[in-house]
Length: 359
Image (cartoon, rainbow, N blue to C red; front, side):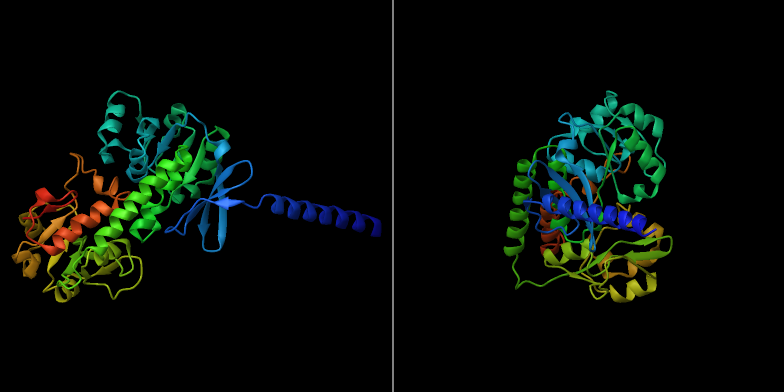
């Protein structure tokens, strides 16, 4: 019995030593610079580079660059992911999407029209047969898909790597845009991705610096009622950060969490009675539509003064919105619009890229 125990201990000890040695030899020699995001990284080893994700103190290793095909074909389950790929001019390598109604890129829509790309259904409703027949090398989705363990196993067995892209969890606009570096890694154009991102940061920061900080900061309201609830972004959210960077004062900046708060119409009317600008009013395109939905919107001074703007200027006929496709990658363009609106709430929408005036 003692001999058996000794043998087992020796084997376990040897395994531990081998594991420790492996860890030491596998330490990264460098990292790709990721400045704003705290959720992903790219480590450089002696013979390869590898993508990894961070969740609090946990590190999850993902694809290695030597596992990615040089002739990469991808399936994406969000137009947001496509936006990064479009900025890298790699959209011809998208061969499957969730639903083309959500997409605004003309080249990609033409690919669908010519049957060079197909629809495979949304997360939770994927047509597995169509996905497998399209034969992508990589499927890009949110981590929500990872809850379906059997699907992930089936995809890996079929040679389809899954990359979870949770960029929507980033609350800093530049951190969300920095995920273009992840796509640069996937498409083997890291230098191009780095250069694009540096230009975006430079544009964004220059606009912030050039704001006249002595001018009045307008009070800004966002969103509208949905099913009798007014969901407002938290004071540390992505939207709140954009408003602050554009020299606006967010009405609900005191609600410090990241998530949305469900508020009553009465509370919002009370807090926002004298706000200066109202943005992101859901699907509404005219004041009449707002009034027909709920005539109490007219109690807001901003409604009476027609200082209402929505982020739907680049919307397709099905409701797919380029604000959530390219705007995520180009927060500098969003910021430019907001600075213009906050500086002059009567600005012509012809001078805006993503926004229209709700009049």
